[in-house]
Amino acid sequence: MKVRADLNISLDGFASTADGTPEDPFGKDWFRLVEAYAATRTMQERVFGDTSGAGTTGIDDKYAAAYFERIGAEIMGAGMFGLHLHPNDPEWRGWWGENPPFHAPVFVLTHEQRPELVMDGGTTFRFLSATPEEALALATEAANGQDVRIGGGPTVVRDFLRAGLVDELHVAVAPILLGDGGRLWDGLRGLESAYDVTSEVAESGTVHVTFTRKANEAPPTSPWRPDGDTL
Image 1 (spheres, rainbow, N blue to C red):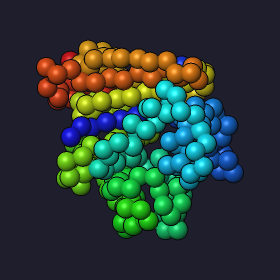
Image 2 (cartoon, rainbow, N blue to C red):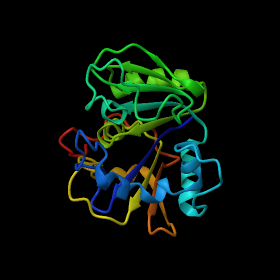
Image 3 (cartoon, one colour):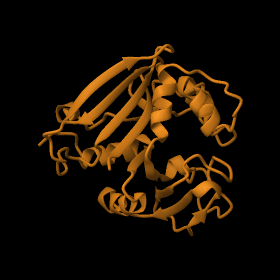
Image 4 (cartoon, one colour):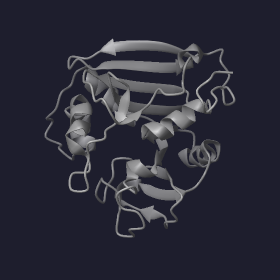
């Protein structure tokens, strides 16, 4: 069982965008950021429901397929679920329709009290206020031996990285500049020292960088202070 995280980021390190509006919550920059991933055959089928075989099948698709492998539970932040735009709205059921692509228990970190939400396809959203360690303990039990994915956004992934809880981090670095948004790397100086780091360039120009915890590295206990200084 591994704890995994997977994000798309820009060249300047942003993993969420800032040009959304209430009328257009994603904005144009989000689609620039995820363009290569969204174009893959795997994402076209698993997220957009296109089973025609359309989509790219190169290196980007290899990582898109790996994104879904062996996931037994997911942890995400309130923003990823959309609660920042739909606070205290009992009718809001997420961005993904009635059959979300997770097909596993999903733990949404939020201070908002909401009842458990059971969707089609095996996805159940559970809303809780918890520390990374507490949320991971619940997700690990629910995953039943499979991997736990820290889905995002960048603030949530950063919190789990700071706590030393992530075994494998994959970032797809899109060849674009955003200039604003939610940054991933702030406060994580020296993170690479605990991981083996590999990279691979896709046909789209996206650089796939994977951090895998070194075999001789025990999971550290809070190796990064909130102010970003290493211990």
